[in-house]
Image (cartoon, rainbow, N blue to C red; front, side):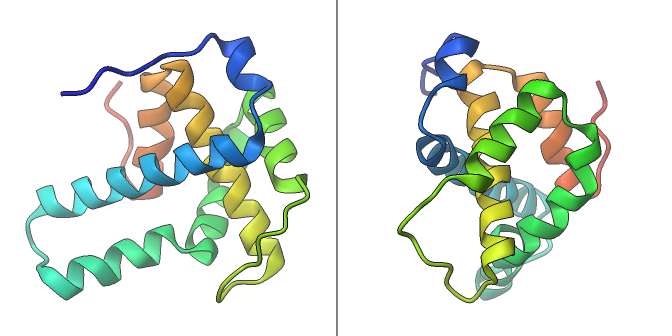
Length: 135
């Protein structure tokens, strides 16, 4: 088990949105992989294909459409700051709109993770796979 280095909310809020998205990308990918593996019905290439469907920019953009109305003020602020952040990165196999929205989603996930808000993080992530959080 590893120790989460939890940041104060104010520290996380001012962090570079690309850094938040970097962390969020890893958290989201691991969450999806874990759920698919624990489901136990897929193997090898099928696992990879399913993970890709969730974590690619268009998949994340579709997911954000569902959960955007659920964001509180802080989450919306992080999302917008990351979505609108100027970057030199180019979208691969995605529209710029999907890429920016996916970056916003990843930043919110990274923000919640770094703040240690596990309950809220789980609530939103469970929605990404069509499940309701039991809390």
